[in-house]
Image (cartoon, rainbow, N blue to C red; front, side, top):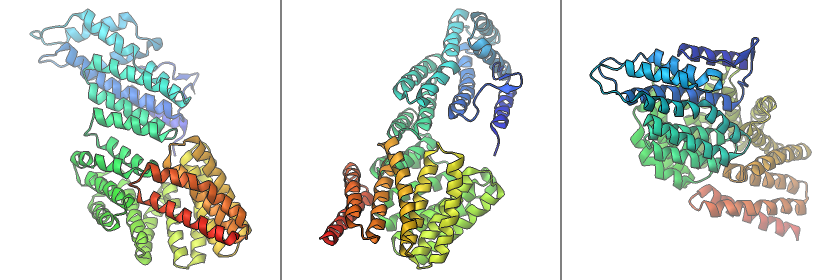
Amino acid sequence: MKTSQQMGSAFILACVGCGLAIPELMKDGTFLTDWSSPATWVSGLSFLGSLLGAVTGIRSLTEKGKEPLDRRETERALGAAMFKEGVATKADLNALAERLVAGRAPEAEAPPIEQLAAALDGLARSGIAAKTEAFTLIEQNRTDEGLAQLQAFARRQSEVLGQAAEETAKTWRQIGTLLLTRNVSQAAEAFEKAVVAAPSDRWTLVELCRLYLNSLGKPGAAEHLLPLLHASTKDEYEKALALEIEGGILRAKGDLPASLDRHEESLRLFRDLDDDDLPPGQRQRELSVTLENTGNLLRDQGRLSDALDRYEESLGISRTLWEDDRDNTDRKRDLAIGLGRTGRILRELKRSPEALDRFNEALTLFRSLNNSHPAAAQYRRDLSVALNNAGDLLVNEGHISEALAYAEESLALCRQLANNDPSHAEHQRDLSISMERTGDVLEAMNRITDALAMYGESLPIVEALAAASPDNAQFQNDLKVTRTRISELKTKQI
């Protein structure tokens, strides 16, 4: 994986390639910018995108004729103006306006230089500084202030550039991306605004559908976006992604046969794609994910051997991808997830020694990821799930004390995640599951009162999830199971 210094150098080279002046990024050979911060990259990439949009908008303002302005010269001049001592100077902007007007074809009607200079001034002053400040506010959990500032920036952008829909959508996508690890409900609201501004943007639709399905447990909300998602597909790859999401919606609503049909069709499309048409490893990764999804559905239907075949094929792809790039954390995580899935199937097939090997390898990888990225919520969740998987098997094998230690470690992680974002349905469900797994271990130790207390603490969470998402079959089934287990424990307590 690239270091922060290498990434910073790459970013500077990209800017230099566009002719941008970047003072204050380095001093005496040392980076002054935290290149590991998400805000740095979101605001930096945002600036590059906004700058290219600005060039288009400026050309529109000057109403060029036969002789278009040189793109690099325009970018260099605007970049220098926006970065000079952190503030664009009137002299720079007036000079740029004069050059823009002078570059028009002779017969084209020229807008007043003062008008163009004022528009450029507004753009420069509301540019990178405003966005950086807004993203900083969001990182400090001052979300409302950050959102308000970015909304104001989007309005100024649209006034100057005349690209309200595209630029506003981009800003809301950036907001949503930053909010993903902080508050998924607010992240979803940001992506919803991006969809309203640009309803044909496939990436935003995919991200929002996955949020509804995986984090918020709202398949009905994702289903409403399906017509837009299918309409936005332009090739077989995008069609496969849309089918995968449709399959996820159908599974969440309890229609397993239809869900399997969609995932099988998605799988066929991914198998037929050419690796050369996508970035390195992307087709293989999507194929691996879709194999896991079809495996999940086969497992749901009790077809354990068929599910294991899909999981093993997926695991083989994930292992190959990771071995090709062991510094890639996404590939490392994919491998660990695949190990956990195959371990669960092997446990259900009564192949406990093989299952334990998979669980232990997954735990090692997840602990490594969590130790390297202690602030990453996803890795903490992954570790909690892996601990529960291993703990279940240890209970079955009679290693009760070790299983309780795993269950309690998982429960502590789940409590932290659920408390950090109460709107995150997946984290709330994880907490209820971890409570009940701990209760199961306590039951195995004949501590029935303690086990009942764990289930009693889980019940309000399960009830709230089921009430909030009546169309989520999984949440409704969770509620039935929890109530049944409480009744069983009460009977044992007598």
